Image (cartoon, rainbow, N blue to C red; front, side):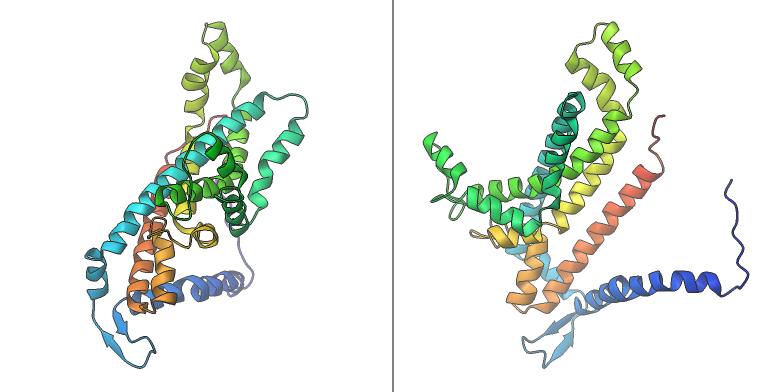
Length: 295
């Protein structure tokens, strides 16, 4: 049972939470309110005239082929980055969990990519996949694979997916490794005594026990792919070629800062905000309340 804390002065608890409330109001509530208000306005490029149009900006998005294309691109990009990041993190954690000698060194090397800035990670993979000087492009050309992400949309999408997923693999690796090391060895040994092979032990014993960690990482990776890959896209393809990698968060930037269509850009940001709220509700509803971690 939680003990109630009593303050000597009734104003003190309000003063303690005031800085956090101020930060929330200034950096979250106020910008969200501004975006919601601006999404119902149509302004000229110089900000000299403004017209209140209610929900016309949202209705225009539904009939905009480029916005519908960005939704499709975002779904493909997000699902691919999440699947590749979680799958690679789980595989590496399973391998590192079995390593006995030099385990600390291996784990440090696998965690290192998380310290790399997203823009730097994007430039790194852009250089390796460059069709003229990139070593990976050179190897693929040697295998007879046609590769040029600068003009081919599918190649560009593969490149940004790998760059974004590589940045997130370390984060997934840390959580999966911690989850694997918390599983009682007696369960795995009992399954081995019953004749279960390594693959069956992993699929029937280990993976179900990792399901809370997997679900948590799935939500985190979806949020990451939706909102934190702007720098990777900007540093590698800038949404091209031919909008093949123009995900929703990057289209907000292009329409607002390059196209100066502030009303449409604000409406798109509100749609993204609603997606964040939906993902947060899913996380609190299914991760924080329904998932029970074994002892």
